[in-house]
Image 1 (tube, rainbow, N blue to C red):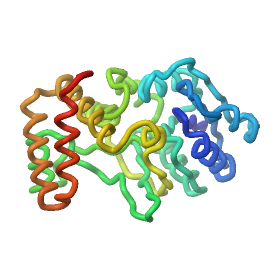
Image 2: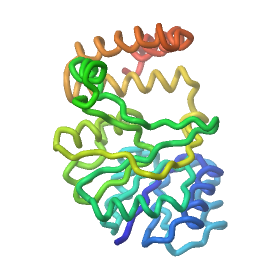
Image 3: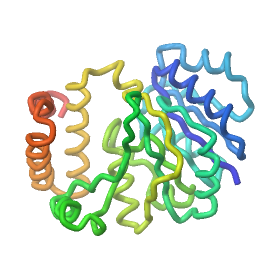
Length: 271
């Protein structure tokens, strides 16, 4: 068994180095690591190449910023592993990941996602309902029947299922491509399971350096509208948006002003 660990990088030199270092130190099964660099302007590649001379790691400078989905697909084209692990550069792995790879190899019909441990010790990346009105009602009243999706920071999938799903959708430059992938997997009847090992996740990565929280949410909303245009209709988008505003009103009211501001901004120039 060979696992191809695919990492898309954009200006995350320190985090990328720590991520690769954790892989080299902790992963003992057969792997190759492919780093696709979206024309970083920091010292990402030079630092990692100088400090981590390892025959398992291949660095691919892409020449320009292709975005998350397209860069992942370009790296996947060069992968030789039966199992693909799409991993964000703002993560660190432990030796427990070896068992997850063995599980994925023994059960290639499933897709696996890792829980993410945040800086404050909280754990995220649990199942979320696919954002359609009917499915959200199933999530509330009969959760076992709801279809789910996960964040794409750590996705372990067989090469066969990756190609069955049509790869990452390159309609998205950034954000919602993970939602689109898990929606496609769900439609094709490919089940997603949570892996046993947790992965440390800094969060934000390159996006936190480039955009404020409001700017980032603006981009998220534009990508979400693209998702609904592609897979459903705009009624679903507005209905689900209204539901989540009500949800925040009771659960996290401080979030609402910034969320509404970003939502309004998302209809501006560049839409």
